[in-house]
Image (cartoon, rainbow, N blue to C red):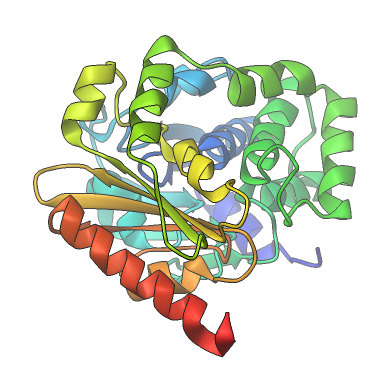
Length: 325
């Protein structure tokens, strides 16, 4: 990756007190990148506060420093210097933006093709598999020295955003970088076990409920799952860390697009989209106010589960119908 980090380095050199944020409902790349950047900034002698609108999912709490990521309401004061990670747009930061001073300067480090370049400094590399891969290049280029903790956080971001190195974004370069991180001290087997293989009983109950709602289109190309607010209450599982459920729909033989439609707050429905090869779900999500990648994307809509279900199925069918697909 021939990305230059000159503007980011100048941005960091000029600052002393940093707010590091990522997107609400954080995944492994968001958490890993937040911790990696926070750790690197402290190595550079900076004062760092890490914040996310949502609590850190339990499965990432083993990462060093994860317990230091705070909710916005737990932080006093405003920040003039902000680094936003893995956010395609400012809205994805959520209520953490309330900690931005009016004149705050923002560095936007991200890999989403839908990124709208909202930062004063933008390091946006859509061909990167994860924001963690961008941070790997920045760190490996001499920003700070590697150690076990730093390698583990970056490895977590690479592992999760490539689906355990199974997605098409797991390029030869990604494997080489992962190998260096393991050589540097990332405990690959432990991270994979905790992040990819370990589930709580509450998660298992929610999966069972989710699969009972599974439906497939008549042509077998679309499958979708619905989750109601009461389903979360019945399972005892919080609404964090549920997007992996969408893969049960997408992984069915013959299905190209898997969809998870779940109720959030009253009148709000979150939609997660995954595709195999035909449909660019990032394009659909962007049209509907969200974003993401060609094979993984999402958005939030107003309406009932039934209304949002019919709307997203209409959009996906239209895309599948193009070019005789």
